[in-house]
Image (tube, rainbow, N blue to C red; front, top):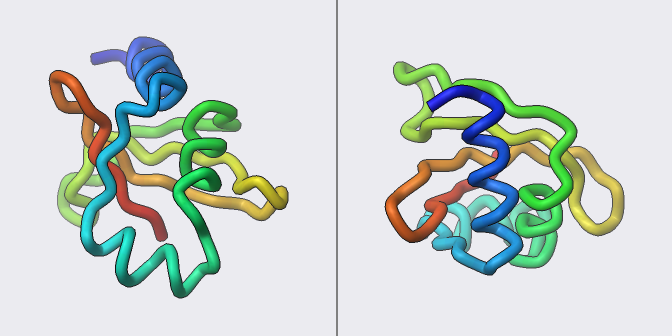
Length: 90
């Protein structure tokens, strides 16, 4: 999948609420960063950039950059599944 196709798919699926959070995101990273699910959704629906993940360091397809609802920088790692985005944050 090309970068522009991935971005369009991610924005569309996130806008529909088709997001599944990994345990790592929900129970470790998001609480540590003071994030809620709406912060991640905001980043995915208002991205400022996207790049292919490094398969050796990230178990995801794409890294989406944007901000949370407060305007703080946020990177969301995304795997595009058939009917859901599987995400974690760092």
